[in-house]
Length: 235
Image (cartoon, rainbow, N blue to C red; front, side):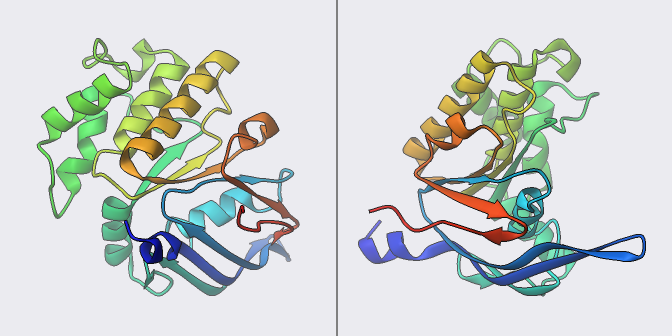
């Protein structure tokens, strides 16, 4: 990767606002957020509950739309895409990791990981062999045929990470990925994410309440009342 490519943001937000109606009131979840996140960065987003962290992550990933402003992913404005176009972007460009894993309970670990490949319009891998490769990489080679209720929380989260990586997305978005795990399992998940970033050049954006976890990121953005109050690039 040459230096110009490295400094081109893979995520660019310009004056993002998000207003939500709650009963008769309007809640200003995001208030003019600007940010650039670059290739191969590992960026933490912190802030108090209700500060807009998960809302921002959902907008970056095309799961929600801003009230105003634009989001570019890899140089392409996704703000006005229709659902079919957004689905393709999410399938090819973005992997999601959630606090509550969001695994399909009736499917095995292998089937959960293979599913995004089955739905990919441009299939880069054979679903079964890719699932085996990822599960093996994440230390779950003996758990191919286990369903989620047969796995520990840490194992379920590693299955969720494998699923997020199924189509080789350049961006991983993680919403409190260690929030439901004990400290040992949380450390294992963070180590897995760091290894993925180092080996694949993946950009990782991670929402967390855990300041010790955030301290291990390349850069930390702090949200307060829907605004970023820091976020300068590191030296």
